[in-house]
Image 1 (cartoon, rainbow, N blue to C red):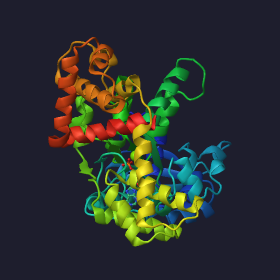
Image 2: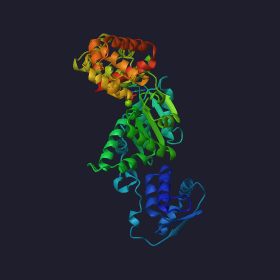
Image 3: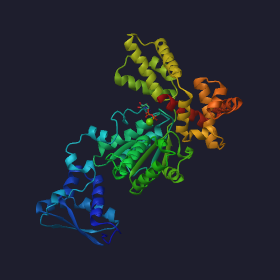
Image 4: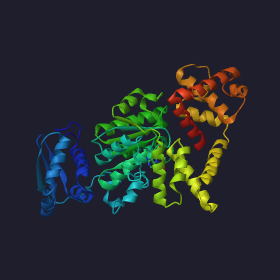
Length: 467
Ligand code: ADP
Ligand code: MG
């Protein structure tokens, strides 16, 4: 039933929107009182009539009239007169709290601690702004992330943050969520990854088709479209997955239109997505696009020093600088190397000197290089990264989006497995050994002159070794 104000909106839906607006400007207890005590009676072109069941409620609600009025006007997009009347109680009055999800459901929300909320939102408390070290490489992303956390949905939305692996995307996007949960209890935050989003959608589609499971497409939509802040990490995972992209597009649009906050991270900028639907690329590009560069030596050293001070590790600056000088690829590896050195010294009961660290680092590097991988694993990782089919890599097509991944396959198989060119040629669809040699050499040169290829190869290697 329409209310004559917003076409096709019932007065209950209108009121629900008002309550959502209220959730941003008032605390949960107040919101609970308002939503439990007030019922919408009537809505017309220039006024709205609310009712409650006793004078005590009426007087306590009148204290809130100002903010209710603001929210009513925001939803109706015009100024409406508000009247509150007292009516006799109805049998279903105790059920008048509208279903606004677990955060607003008092029965499920007796005393949710900040930690529980973080967990429910998919966040890890260890990622905070406080323990994020700022350097020239991440100063701008850091400051934008802080502004987003201070004013979600207002300052910048959507935000698209990209970088190579291990440079702090997950840390920053999670810090945004954690900060909002700590400082704005009424705001609903949800963190997910491109991979989790895809898997959940598949599960939801299957249960909707009656193939078992309780989690339906409706649940899925409700979950993702009902939040105030959606944090999606590693969006590259949905590339090339048609149904997931489509669903994500609608989720994105619903939140975008409602002026909610969206933050996305990815291992590459939107313009580098080959198989992403054009309308998604343009949506991503409509917001703020920022990147994190690899950290300088000073930042790497500062990150390790901060870690040392926090854990009270027995390792001096000279050794820390040595590690920071030698591990330049990314922060995850830097931290990994540091931990290995410290743990080994504890296990072997040895003082950490620069020489000791050097011996340990050698082990780290050689362990990494000797982890055996086969041709199939490499090809799978490449196809995954570039969202291309194996049959296309092995086939005849010569378009750029296939040729580059194909040549990278030639290079990486040679480099990581040392398989003879002829065998690689057979594996890659019966190609000549000279074709493989040419392809591998071409990529070897590109590695020096083309930063994007270098970055892509680092990312692909990361996928190969993490599986
Ligand atoms: P990404 O998501 O870009 O792959 P992560 O956010 O997982 O990278 O970062 C890898 C590791 O490095 C994490 O343990 C993270 O806490 C740490 N890290 C990254 N950047 C910083 C920073 N600026 N200060 C402190 N720790 C950092
Ligand atoms: Mg990450």
